[in-house]
Image (cartoon, rainbow, N blue to C red; front, side, top):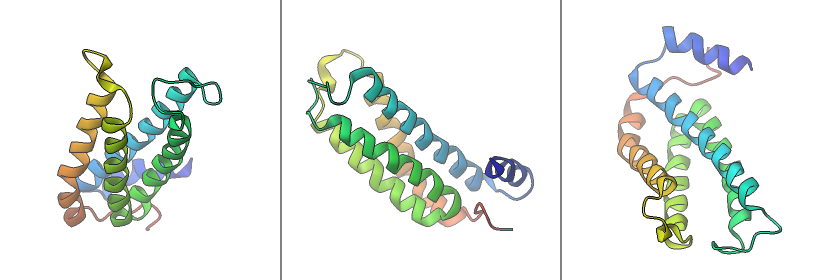
Length: 139
């Protein structure tokens, strides 16, 4: 867990506002991975019968792995991380809005939260691309 100590030190001494925001964004993808694991645990994998498509659990297993990769890329390779974060959010939003029966609830907080996070990713990527320079692992 040295990387946590390194982030904490850099937060106080090296990072600008864009760097700090990128770290928060990265942790958002960790939250996503945990949420996806929770979805599979709550709804099952091999015993899953809907209402989402039968491939949904495997999509969520895959997106869990991708979320962790995006987290690490945002910290260690900022521009690669920004590109992968946008691609991940585009994919997740398309799948969630078109494949899952998300409108069966009057207030779907999961879809609303995912959409808001996607908007944050899309809206801040140009700023982070220009202004965020700190990288984990760089002395």
